[in-house]
Image 1: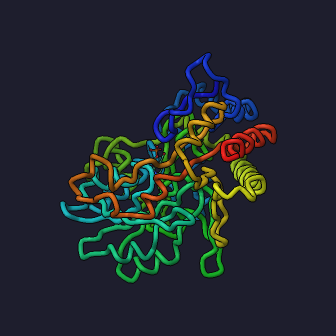
Image 2 (image 1 turned 180 degrees about the vertical axis):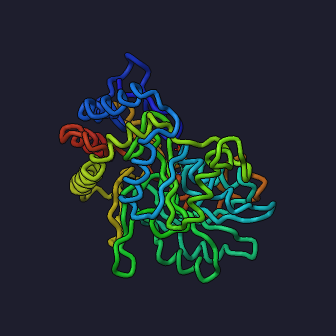
Image 3 (image 1 turned 60 degrees about the vertical axis):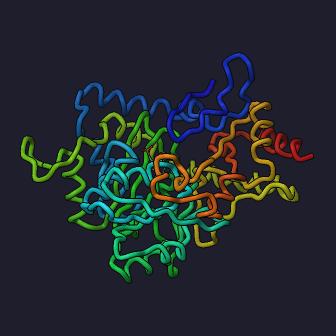
Length: 392
Ligand SMILES: Cc1ncc(COP(=O)(O)O)c(C=O)c1O
């Protein structure tokens, strides 16, 4: 049985033990671990030998390495990808009624953090081809109360940052890049390649185990070019003070564990190869799905280098296909079945079905297939064969 994951991973595809064979799990972390076990175990065991579990040297080493990868001046480890969004939002000192614009087609944390930082999420629609937030929709949603814009680089490709940045900077609004799904993704903007998290006021990463760079538990990181923002993030993650028992402001405990940093440091050298392998799997799927009218393969914006955190199709009769794939032991998941604007916890904001039509269409027809680097040719063929059988 593959490893079970909670939270962002859809658990629906896990079969009842002994009832169904899982031929192709949605993600196979055991295969990844088997390939790199010695490197990770030795990194972890050196932390255990040293017994420095809080703010050990691996934190700074990882921060430096991820800042280098993301081409940011600073990278600040924190407890999760959720906290990586929450802490920058806290630094904005939002007052009741302050608005933060965010797409509705994303994981809950993108907007839950806005609420938890004291602001009001303002949900906007996405582009139908990339699933990323629409710059026009952002522009139309700006009001005098807009305090920030959150852009999500969904499924592993960057949103149209240059247009968002132009809209935001003309009005002095900070942009947070939620790059939880896009570590190492890049985009050519005005002829120059930029990394996910490089050009926003702050960028955020998640090291949730299923992410392209996943830890052995929760973890996250904040990216920024701004010295003052970095200092504030370092304080906020340590109860608001850099000197033990002295607190300049009220922060929280949101440190990245040293053990997680050691795991992530050991995995980091493999990340570029893993992302390239994911791109290869995506290309192989696109080739094999050619001519199947019921299946629309993912569209990569030509300016983007995609890291395929997810390989997400748009399909006819999605729910029936999902049932069929599960019956064949093929892992698949729907990210995301209900837009955040229609979640019961945000009902008071007054969005109705029809408010965000592109998001609502995507909710009905997206399905993500296995795309991890260790996916074999035979497994990929099994996935494609099962999809083709369904439509034939
Ligand atoms: C787009 C997005 N934002 C934020 C998060 C939150 O990250 P974490 O689970 O590490 O808190 C996730 C999922 O993990 C995500 O996919």
